[in-house]
Image (cartoon, rainbow over all chains, first blue to last red):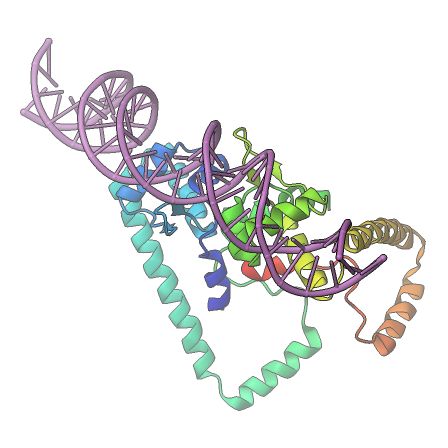
Length: 133
Length: 133
DNA sequence: AATGATATGTTAGGTTTTCTTACATGAAAT
DNA sequence: ATTTCATGTAAGAAAACCTAACATATCATT
């Protein structure tokens, strides 16, 4: 579960690639970083390296800007979203904890009988995913 | 089906990133290209850009080299594999067209009984996948 | 209308990364 | 004892990226 996030947060792309992927200028990308909307990693030589999550964020930023939201607004939006996802995660943990073993057994049995192809979980797949697979 | 391929073949990574992802030296990566085991794209400025498929290939190459296979061998292997996957694809299309539901049920039952450890079925998911999702 | 803030463009000089080419080398094959 | 193969290493050039500074268009505010 955190495994996925580790991968999506792996620094891979130089700014040139990100420019193409997002259709933003280097100036814009750096400006958004300046306003702490993203925080790409750096190589030893001080070059920025962006991860998939960064790119998703940039695409979101672009969207919001198109809709007239300014830096401060976007920052707040991201904060709220983060809170939300934390809350959701806690809830799901809580749910898991509250199940008794008995319930679990039942659930499992049920699961085995009916397991459909429906294993999609809430944590949203970033838009960048469409580039792969 | 070809949609996926478009994405996995999208040139994204500079050689530095590929080095880290594969733990190969630049020298090695370029050498394999020289022997036409991969053909990365280029930027306008002539810098190499690798896609996910390239990285999968490089990991395969690394594996094969560890097992003592030389350039020519790897090249042949790749050729054969490509042929195989083409054939398999054709077959699966044909199969879909020709199998009745009844036949499919039988096949599946059989498959489930006898499927040994041999399911590394040709179209292997590149190892790089573990970095994402 | 003048002022100021915001988001982005542009330029300049410096550093890192990558490129090609050439030569070097250890191990394996002949 | 030579070749061949896979890789290392070095040099010089070019591309990509860095920071910092100044420029500018669009708004909102005065």
